[in-house]
Length: 348
Image 1: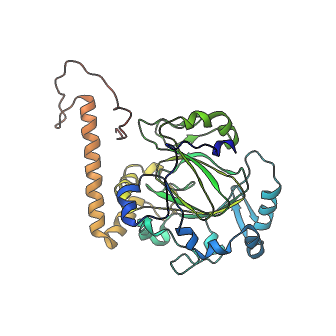
Image 2: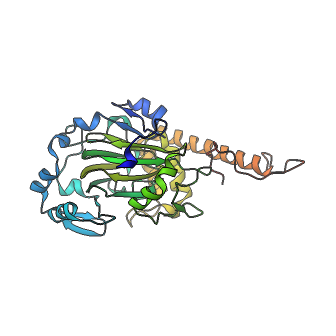
Image 3: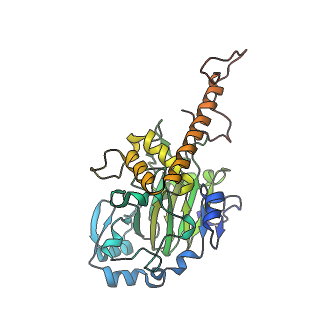
């Protein structure tokens, strides 16, 4: 795999044995990283392999993109297909189907550094949050970004972690923002609500990988068996399995991004999906539940949201030459622009 060789040191995704919740909140909530220890403590890590899953769950039906197959059929497909873009098993009901216990004394649990998932307050009304992922060598996910969730669900400003239980995955990632263009070969609608990447993973790697690797924004690395990678909200990423792999991914709303989640639900309702038909106003539901369970945290989140929006308004006023009261400032010359390359503030 030539694209995995000689990863520039400046591009390498940082690796740690583990992080504390305080370290994550203060320094790493907006950055990708790999942890090498937490997954190795899971009982599932000791038990799961493709053979073990086939023996225990061979007749269990899982979702593989647009089809529902018993696991034994997918395993046969995974071993024998020669598709350029192989089907990827991606099932959001695996915990129930496999009768797994997701808790500290159970089969597996979220790495502790990520802290509480604030969407837990939604209880049975929350969107899907975790998936079992199986794929053969060369399968994976072409370029996309999860500003709100992992993969298919877009409920709020959310992060994700992806834990490899068997095999290994290559990741290449880019931050997003008004001053950051999409990765080469990726096309985005004007409001950034739709992303098109017409190339297969193999085509993108062949035609654009070398160019992408030269970018100062590029981050890449290999998440090996027993490791977990953090995917910050909004980061572009392409993922390819280097060998047959088994992984679990889960998305979450961390305390460090509560203000962003509140703002997204309130201000971009047309981009919110994944909730059941019984949820008519996700923003109000989330705010009400937080007020009942975490009132002080909600107040801090709302205050931070107001501060962020005032900052955006102030920048907008500076750009268009307005004073704080909305009146035009005197100016000899006016040059319209959206900040320099290091400025990621969104302009309304």
